[in-house]
Each structure stands twice: as C-alpha cells, then as structure tokens.
Image (cartoon, rainbow, N blue to C red; front, top):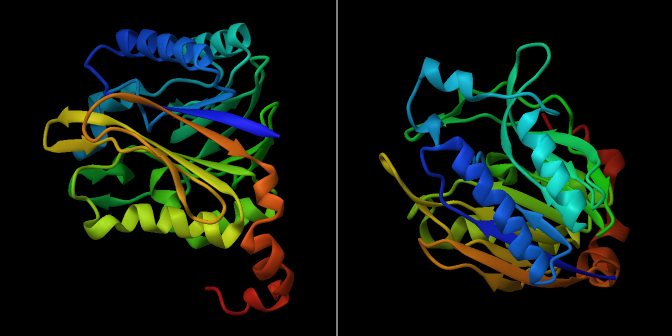
Length: 275
C-alpha cells in the first residue's frame, strides 16, 4: 500500500479566519496533487503566542474539539476524501487547554485527538503558561491511508514517545512543528527524527511553519523520512511550500528495525531501567 503524504508548510497571519481559509484551500491543492493524507504545522491558525510568557489574551484563542473550526476541517476532509492531521489550541470541556492534533479520516470522521504530553519553557517557547500536559497517551489511528501516529513538536525529543508509537503499530508518525532558524545546531532535530524512523521501522513526516513572528523566525524545511532513516522529500527554507512524498508502507515490515532490532527486544527489563 502506498500513501502520498502532503506537508502543508505555511505561515500564520494575524487573522485567524483567513488562516483557516488558507488551510482549507491547501487541502484542496493537496488533493489535486494526489495526496491521501495532509499534515499541518503546530497551532497554524494563530500567530505563535507561546513566544510571550503569560499573555492572558492568548488564552482566549483556545477552542473546543469538536467545534466550529474542526467542523470545517472535517467537512473539507470528507469532501476531498483526504485523511487530515490538523493542529490547534484546544479548550477541553473541563476548561483545560492543550496543544492538540485532531485526526480526521477520509470520510471526515474525527478518529481522535492527540495532545502534546511534554510541555517546555525556555526563551521563545513559554508553553507551560498555555498548555496542560496531554492526557491521552500516544494513540495510533487506523486511517484509510494507513496507521498513523502523532508526536507534537516537543514530544519528538522523547524516545519513549517515538517507541510507544512503534509498539502501537504506527506506519507513519506525523510531527506538527514550530521550529526556528538555527534552533538546533548541525541538523540535530532532523537527525533525531531520522533516527527514530530507523530505530522503529516507520515513516516520519515533519510539517513545520514558516515566517517571522516577533522574535522568532520559523524555518520551514519540512521533510519526510523512510524507515531506513533516508530523507524522501524536503520543503523550501523560510518559504511556504506543499511538500509531497510517496510512502510505500510495505517498507515498514521489511525495515532493518523490524527484521533485526525488534525481534531481539527485552521489554521485560526496560521498566526497571526507566525512571
């Protein structure tokens, strides 16, 4: 089974409604180019508010899922027959706020919501002001295009997350990202994503935002990686792009990880080593 994935490398303007219209239009363009699945960057409907600590007005940007925005995304996914991994600022019924990726199947059904688990706080990324830690684990969604997991931005740094998605059967791990120019030296954030794909025997696809927002300059350079850690496609640097890659999901079963590493795992030991 082959999946064509589209990575919507976008900039976010100040107008939330215009950003949503742009996202819906890009979904149409992805489908015209033969995509089976589209993935979006992190909180792409809004300017990147976490760069400023404790902006109380930004808390008002959170919205329910399902809700007006995701209803429109779901309708567009259904219209196009396009599996869609979105990302937005979620307000839960309990009043908690999350960095969330709702996942829609090709018929527009909401399959579930992945919420970012690890919440950071450092210069330009004061996320603990805005997000509660995710409470839904790391689900893998059985979509029409294949078995898809999500690791939202900061979660990709945690091998436990990337391994758990492999254990749960992911063929593709989507990474909604807000990464800046020079954030990690010498290509380290790309290297860790490639390593995760190689160690776990799945494809990875990172969708990054672009544009200058206040103190931050988002880099773009979205990319897709095969289960041997090879980059299949890469987006433009510092400019909007729609990055397409064809993924032969059968390669997961024959990957080095699945042929060698996984058969020799000792999971009965790992619990006592991890704190």
